[in-house]
Image 1 (tube, rainbow, N blue to C red):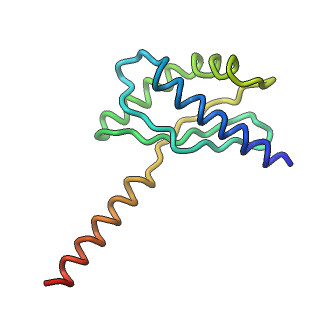
Image 2 (cartoon, one colour):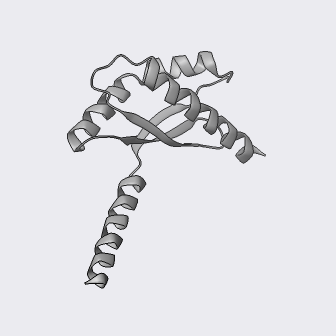
Length: 117
């Protein structure tokens, strides 16, 4: 039962955070960020937010710093939008799966080109 609730809360946090980052954040360090997933612990004390950032490594680092500075603002806004007794602690991590998938697709394309030759 707790896992079902954690999943629902995670999806709601993902939806609200995506909207907050796109519309409410005014920090110029934050680039084009997509929230790809949220994992919430069963006791709802922590939420790992998986992000995909468009840009190079420097852009990723500056976006992460900007988000970490805005963690208090994001938690308070989440508290206003989602009715929870305690808003989970937000932990931001990069989602490398999109880059990994595109790299594999590129390699498979190169293999396909070599087979045709």
